[in-house]
Length: 358
Image (cartoon, rainbow, N blue to C red):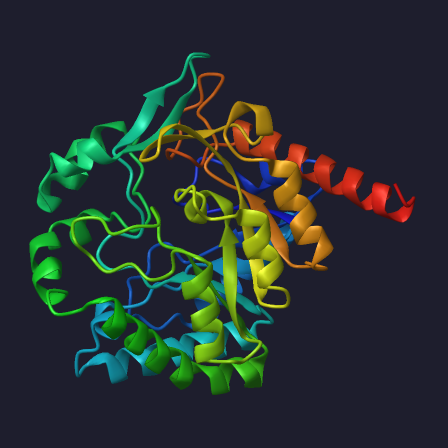
């Protein structure tokens, strides 16, 4: 595997490439053109400039997260054809620049949902958190307002102000989209893009819904083992794969994370490995990557990835805000750097134990 770090670009990220380069064992970044909009074609010139900037720091681009999908594609409206054509053009440009991994999601309206961006933990750190009762007390249009004050001035991915200004319109547009229609629209999208993925060897890695259940009545399909295996069979192409996010699938405590990993051998192209601490079934917060700080057995998650021969990029995810750092919630430097080092340590121990027959 390769240990990586998410980076939003020099205009948007408080973390620098120089800092990432100094994290032991981190060799690549997962990045994006953060100032593009869903449906827009990424020019080869812009991709090339981003690649040059990263490589000048001694790192490389391990993958893209994300090339966001326009709502017309998810809804299945008539204008989806143009947006799929644009997406295909972007994939071509990425392939021409020797970039071969794209993480994406197929979540309606909200890319992820949290009710708090800075819940204070007993040690004084602050974390992203979710409480179902808080969601139940809100109307969708007020969701962004309820958390925006703790964003530390950052533009949150999937929660861009111009998008949030159209939340009511988006809900109206998705009114007739249920789980089956969303599956059908995902199938249509994948069948359209697979030829270019095969031509340029681009691995598409779908990110699960977060949390792994319906919020505000919206359809959610990438939520469990049954559904993700259905998706793999639906378009049975090795370039149709998964971003295995332990924190997203893990929001549903019925999901057996190591078992899910083993069931997806050969189809996990990318992994987000993080820990959650549960207070009740639908009240949880992000934790340090250390197993004992949360509710997940991080050793078993990493061992499952090792056992299936996973050789793609892994990144630590959703760190705590510690040591007075001010950054995009979940995406500061310090705790994610600790997480990367911890995950690398687990991998080294698993690898050496295997080789020594222990």
